[in-house]
Image (tube, rainbow, N blue to C red; front, side, top):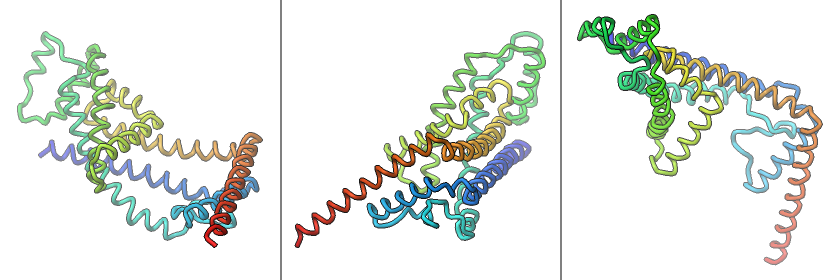
Length: 286
């Protein structure tokens, strides 16, 4: 079954690329704890006040954060990493593998419905009709794209734009629904809208929509899922690196120092008012 072999290979390759990107981003994120930028006194004062306010408001600190030396830092213990590699990452990869399979079929269907380079009329078109009926559709679509490009066939911008819109709108919607079902979440209107918004914002930040448009123009349909997955993995790593640089510069800048001090003062004032209110209620109860 060459058709199944090709699709399975494409899906597994997408999953492998996604796994590499996730692992690199995770390790980069964990290593932030070792950066000297967190030793900034203003930042330490800000995070200590934030932790105090969180504990006072919710009677506990956020479970995903650890209070070390009066600073707010990501938990970098071995247990957290083990939990990620043994629990979170395997579940995410299983979900992604299923979604990658659907993405593969989705791209094949879109290209079959709206070909990027429609076959012309004439000798070339008649030649294209003489194909093996048992030949996998993926190979036919991939070969026709390459041949059309070699012949200089014009791109149907209408088809490309329609495919792009369908991928952004309908593609995001079915990915949201599948993600909720796989994650064991109830498929309600609210959860669907939230998940769709998250996928949409992530796609915007990772430039996924631009990548998708490029893929529809120059990448054969069977290779598009891998192209998108690779671009998304690179974007995730790049965003993590840029975030680290941006935060480091913000903490060292005069503007960042002023903003943190103002927020710290506001939090302190809020805590004082909260304590006064609490004492007043205590006196009233007496």
